[in-house]
Image 1 (cartoon, rainbow, N blue to C red):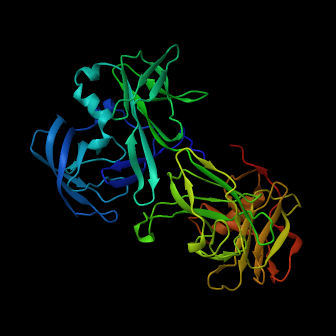
Image 2: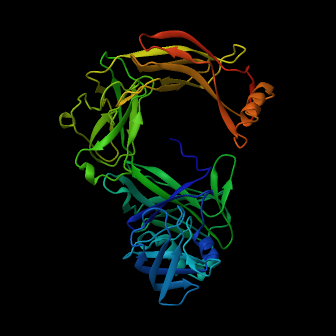
Image 3: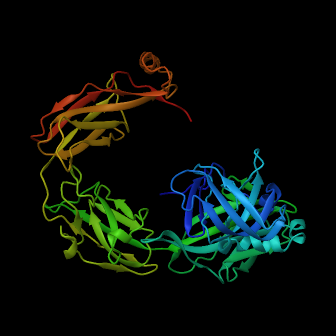
Length: 480
């Protein structure tokens, strides 16, 4: 999956042993200097008690914190936080130490806002270096950041492995570049650079890759890339999360020896019992047209590779859970071992037995016969069977052609589906008329699905040359 850092960043905050995820609708985030300016108080504190003790779900929490050091705005020995119950409000665990950026609410209560720089004390080295250098640090330019090694661990989920020290970091300006190194906490920092536009490029250790990059401070949206916009007496920087650059490649072959597309696979840790697994751990991927798959971003370890893990039979997966190299019983599966930076090829799975399927092919058009490209074609079964998914769907290609695979014997209806909303097409009165009619029964609807006439399928044999047509002529695509 491509990560577009020019769009909304999905920021993961790790707070002590408890992870807190929040989707923050902004690009970048506050720098230490910006966080210092916007906070009403900044403290290092030890959480003595919370109510509730363990926060399950989005419910309010009160945290009683012993103040160990104050950098701004608070001089008492204890502070009480009133955290509201929503997904962007961090919660805390008794017995943990944190760096808090705190604000007063309208109710005159203290609250730690989400999407800021509050974090576990052990993760606050960059901020603490800036705060401990005040007031001098506030009068100078500063570029900084962290380089840390995280892995999606089977028992813990996304977890810190270590701080990456001694790594060369290149700070590239518009006319000059500088080199510096991360310290024992994985932090790099540089003062007194001239105001201007900068990019940060770390030297990645062998066997690792950048998994996430989080830029903070003011940013410059240049024509070619996103850069830091360092202003006078301000901070900017970038944090890098590294992970093992591991990859497993292979193919899935059916009982007849043909490559199978649209089969989904997962990694199962070979030495972690099911009841010890973290619910968020999942390394997965699906086969492409040629039966090829890739699994990546797994930590080094021992694994089983399984196709159709949930065992539900369908047109694309007409077989129960099957383990590499091609066995139904988990105890007979072959364990594969992958080390940091390794790529394993030819991890092929051969399905030993499967149900029969049929293929349904045809063309999807508009009312005037023009092909309907990249629109949905769906098969809905008239009756269900336990542990089988009889439905199927796919998109038409650029010529409107479609192909679906369903389990043999499945009966139901086949139809095309298009989603229409105002101005989806240019100058298309027929689409606007359909939307207007639909809105009479659903005045609040912004868009609606429209179907072709359906074709009844008896599921006995392969079908070709089926024609489905939408109830509107071709219209020019909307210009973005």
